[in-house]
Amino acid sequence: MILVINFGAQYVHLIARRIRELGVYSEIRPYDITYSEIKKLKPQGIVLSGGPASVYEKNSPHLDKKILESGIPVLGICYGLQLIGKYYGKVLPGKLKEFGKKYLNVKRQGRLLRGLGKKEQIWMSHGDLVEKLPKDFEILGSTDTCKIAAMENNSAKLYGVQFHPEVAHTPKGTQILKNFVFGICRAKKDWDIGDLKESLIGEIRQKVNNDYVIMGTSGGVDSTVAAVLIHKAIGNRIFCVFIDHGLIRKDEAEEVKSAFRRFNFRHFYMIDASKIFLERLKGVIDPEQKRKIIAHTFIRVFEEKVKELERKNPKIRFLGQGTIYPDRIETAQPSKQADKIKSHHNVALPKKMKLKVLEPLREFYKDEVRKLGRELKLPENVIGRHPFPGPGLAIRILGEVTKEKLEILRNADHVYIDELKKSGYYNKIWQAFAALIPVKTVGVMGDARTYEYIISLRAVTSKDAMTADWAKLPDWLLERISLE
Image (tube, rainbow, N blue to C red):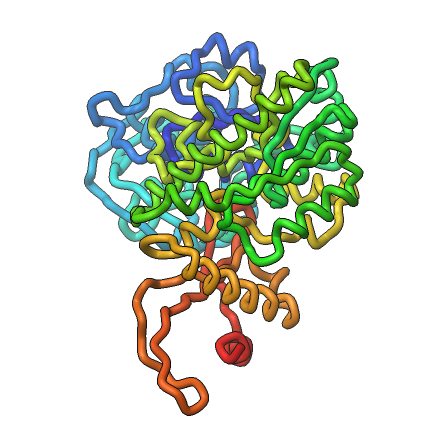
């Protein structure tokens, strides 16, 4: 196992993700982990993540120096490098603010930079600058502005890079991580999602024992895979509830219903609560407020169904959820230092809920969940489905949500997704959707004047929901979509 210590970086899970891609298990712990806790975990290597703070800020995240002196190989990334610099050298706070693409001049490959050329593209994001290190540290690479961009101390087993090897914008970043994990830590490949299916089913079976599970399902990849996994473990002791809040896509309710019928779920319930949600969203403009209203309303509706089912089945003691790693980082769960991105429907649970939470996918990324779904023999139209937010179309309508706007957006989104599927581009894109902008503009349709809302089309590519780029859709496809 390679331990990743989190100092508040939004990319911290990307580090663990990259290490898992190499076939080695990786686990994340907060920066205040103690040396004695680390000894119990027995990691083969430790990675110190980046973070938004300066090492000299008041109350900035720190690290027990015993960890650096433990003899366990340590790789510091960005803030992690600066922490090593603070303990062993000299760091100048706020002296070099760099954000974006730079080029690393490799002076010496050493053990950390094996396989890299003399000049490599890297991705910087930092403010502090490590100016000096002791003689037993060797500088491996520099940029035109950063003298110590990569360094190592083989006798102390301390290594560091000022840039981010975990992001796609550092093309040889995986090679650096591979050098650390295999060349320096001597870790073995023993992590494969295909091998995990049976152990996950066994864990669920052991945890739930003879009790029952109730689960809110959306029909999305995460909740469906989680539900099927639980179903495999405990059979018909899972109760799935689909709440139609009126903010879903066209024909989605029937598609979800037929899918769960195919998966042989005995207990599947549909609730039409669209009127309640629309009423509570009346006059609301702020997207974060929309999220909270939808989450709270969803919980109230769901709780009512739970009470009804509990009266008939008193052994319902677990709440199943399809929460995955990115859900937790968006809600700033993994760290006290991370910035909150948004409220998330999967983690906005009421404190009074007595049910124990069961989250079999909480340690996985979207592509790992998809691979697990294939291991479970789920159809590709479910596995390859684009992510869809819990608040649904409500946050894809700028401004107030109305029945009229929902109908317009629902039809526009259907046309967009349908054309992407027909053209073969749907599976090349991570997420695509239409959004309604509450500004009316004059146009001509046929020979008549029109005055309608603007529909914006968005499409992004990504691998693990931690970074994304805009999708390059061809003009002919955009033209076809716009004419529908």
